[in-house]
Image 1 (cartoon, protein in one colour):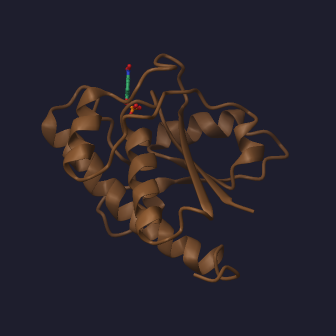
Image 2: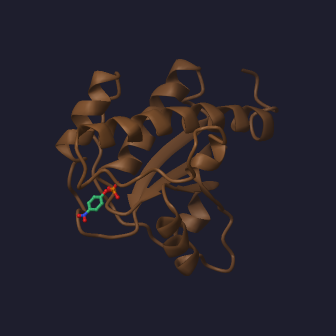
Length: 163
Ligand code: 4NP
């Protein structure tokens, strides 16, 4: 059975699509794409159906991450039964997720940057109203957390797989 990971931010057009794209690419590079499934969603439904923000796409593509096939969707209560990990970009996302977390949830709910303990912050800042540097910072933080998260998966979830 695949390990299922859901990245969550507010609008699902900047941070969580970037996290989905970066983690997906890293998993592919490490030969883990077949055993880990990645998706993303937003706590708000404002941008449902839309592709990731053009700025997020452009900055990600410069580092080799193609976000163009993604479409925004809103988190559902069902996600808590589908996903093993639900990873929030900031504290407000985490609080919003906790508010809809069903009692029988199987998902581990955490801040994504918990997997980058040395990155200097605990939240991926919302770049929506920021300039170019904001989008680069999002990528810098997400790349660090993706590495830490894959290391975590290898230790905790993938030890029974032959890799
Ligand atoms: P995201 O960024 O949560 O990283 O996707 C945002 C996207 C849109 C808005 C806010 C944050 N908005 O206010 O529309």
